[in-house]
Every structure is written in C-alpha cells, then in structure tokens.
Amino acid sequence: MEGKMSETNEQEEMKTNELAGMQFANVELTLSEMQTGPITHLADESGSNSGLGQLAKLGAEGFSLVAVTPKENGRALAFLQRPVQTERELNFIRNAFLLEDILQIEVEDFPKVIDAIDVDDLIVALKPASDALRKLFFDALPEKASLSLQEQIEFLMPKSLRAAEAAQERVLRAVKSLIRSKEVSLQSND
Image (cartoon, rainbow, N blue to C red):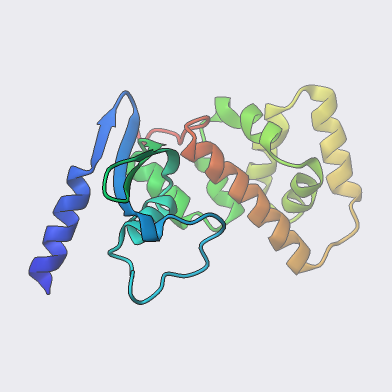
C-alpha cells in the first residue's frame, strides 16, 4: 500500500510545475468524468484516484481551472494554476483561526486588507479585538476615516458572541484570499 502511495505522489509531483511565481498542474479526464454542474461527491467507482478526484484535490489546494483541451479516445486534459505560496503563507491560510493572526500581515498591505473587508464586518469584528489589532487598522486609514471607525466601534451596541465570531471569520476569509492571490504578504521573520 505504501509503495502505491509513493508512486501516486511521485506522479502528482511530475504533473505540477513552477514558472514565474505560478504553479501549474494538469489532469487527464475521461469522457465519462466530464460533467457540468457542481460536484457534490465522488462515486465509489471513480474515487479520489480518478481524474475528477485529482481535479477536486487540486481545487482544494488552491488551483484554479484555466482550460480543458480535448484529446483523442474520449479524453481531455485539464490545465490548472495557482500562485506559489511560501510555507508560512500556506500555514497561515490553513491555520489562521483568530482575528489576532492578522497582526502577521505586512503593515503597508493593510490598506488592501481594509478595501477587501465589508465595513460592517470590520466594525463588529474589531469591537472585541485587542488594542494592538485595532491600532493597526486605525493607522492604515486616513485620519477622518480612522476617527469615524473608532466612533462606530465605540458606540456599537454589544453584539452576540456568534455575530462577532461570524464577522471575524468573514474578515479572516478575505485576508486568506488576499494572501492566496499574493496581493498581501506576511511580515518576514527577521
């Protein structure tokens, strides 16, 4: 069993290439696997080792479908790509569950973070946040916008814990998306 697993991993590595900050992969599909619409589950007969299963795995790893090229004998080749992520970025994307994890973002990237976040979510998310995190957001805004945000947070009526956690999760999701697309980066460990 272990021999088969290492062969599978080796084949997948050969199908993934890097060029100019992007990773590329391809997956061969059979005509029976080509469908339209959302994939809700993998049938037992196709399983996770099928082309469709590989496509789903690469999608979960952040790859986006670029094109599908037909081949002979009812087959097609799917091409995928994603930006290359550093180990720290991948770790952040997988493991950042607390709003305080945002403190790892480069300070100069915070205006991009603020632009990507819904203002109402930001207000609710920052209400229970630490002073350090609030200061980081306030400092990234122009003075008038910063004062307005501070006032809105101060005068916001208490929200339920569930509402605050949901807003924080949406903020984190937006930040993770920015990291995946390389629009923002994490601070260096220097």
